[in-house]
Length: 94
Image 1 (cartoon, rainbow, N blue to C red):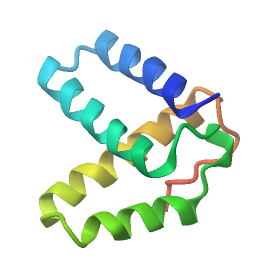
Image 2: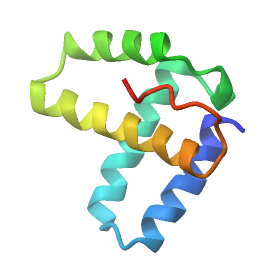
Image 3: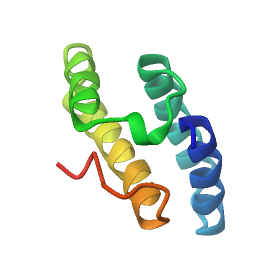
Image 4: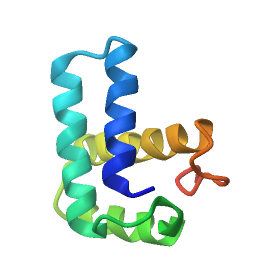
């Protein structure tokens, strides 16, 4: 499964859970930035090292609160993939 497909499933799940349009818009922006950095990889190809490198690049230009939002989104996205059994491991757990 590609990151773009995971996003569609994740967003649908969050809509069902009643997340606000504003929250979903913020998540969509976070996803867009992740895709710009990593590309539309298969989710099984995403490693913890890749995610850490992405966060290090973000840390140089973001306020701590914005970086925190980005970290929470990435963790949530990959936790969702793991919990829904799209992944057998959870790369962003650390």
